[in-house]
Length: 243
Figure 1: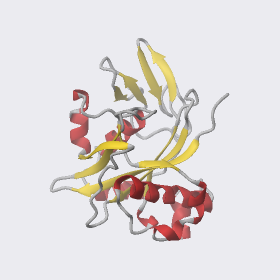
Figure 2: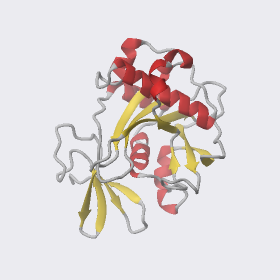
Figure 3: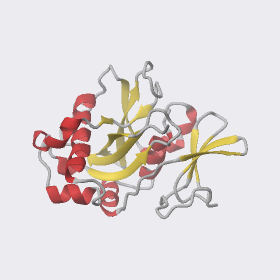
């Protein structure tokens, strides 16, 4: 029996740097039940109470909520996703966003059907509010850092960053842009179809296929590479299966 995915929100906090930009990441506790020690973006499950809590988090333009999710979610569900992001960022790293309107949708990942624990996760992005200084909670997370996406990709193989495939793919996605403003403009522009990877053994390598791969035809293909393959080092690598 396939487990139903739980709704969740992940938040990418962006900070301008003298050259380029960085994104805030936290490291999971080594006692975590899921990917202990992995680096992730702040976020978590959507709570039922989040649907009615927009005013607790700076308010939300109803039309904007509809547009952010391209009408894929009803108003209550859209509000809940954004409130969950703001709430989790506040609880996990101590940053309070000025308004839910600041959150832009960048990606939408759904855990593959073969996994026992599944999440339907919207990745949202915003600038770090002026004067805010995020810190990890030393409970669910044990460390934190600002990561420059291009640098993170360059040193990914050295073992300093352990990431799940959606996180790694998001870092790859961010590395295509030069500034935080470019990322936000792209989030405002792009269509965000759901991405649910499929597992495939390709030769001696395990791979997660993304929509649009030759082995995973789709009417809504991803814009970037279509595979995340497990390398000899035990790490995931983005590969374009279309050649």
